[in-house]
Length: 291
Image (cartoon, rainbow, N blue to C red):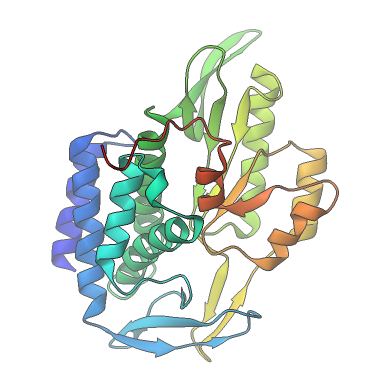
């Protein structure tokens, strides 16, 4: 993993916090490629999935086993992952379908996370930060807009900035996007709705579109190697009804318990990241793949 961390430091240098550019994209792709090469030389361990319709494995090194990896979503051939990531960077969406996007972004993210899991036990920050870098770089390329990490809050008696997740401000008379990025949510997800409530209160409902991007909700019991999904659908309904309205919730490994919320009331608009990108709901100007 020495090469992976070396590449990761290059990503941090070019991105700073959440910027984007040619150098940052190249450094990110090199980091993800190095992580894929590293885990390809470790062994795989089949895990006991308690998630209906899904099977999982983990990468293992010594006595360390990574977080669960979804068999159906994971791409063994990293050249396919890199091709899709580059197509997204270049906005050549006609080359892609929803499944390709979900599998490529999932594979890129989970590979890096797994590599960290088996080399630095207990490190949750590095995988989360890299996943944020990945989503920030992809979305900034698609929206042609660099994200910010805070917004100005004006109120009687004081003026301050509210630290937030990624904010994409596309300019006057266009929507702004509030994009929290999480490797998983668990009970912390209420913070997403709380931030959205503050933005709605300061700027008006609908001015900021809330769209968290989430990797997965799986949890591994390392003792018996069982995989479960931790989901709180009833709480999500309450948050959507009583705190704020999120515009979309975009998953890569989407739990069925949350997917079913789309058909209920109040509707919680859960979908996959690939669905959002190709739906036309985001103001993306695609590029001809032949250009």
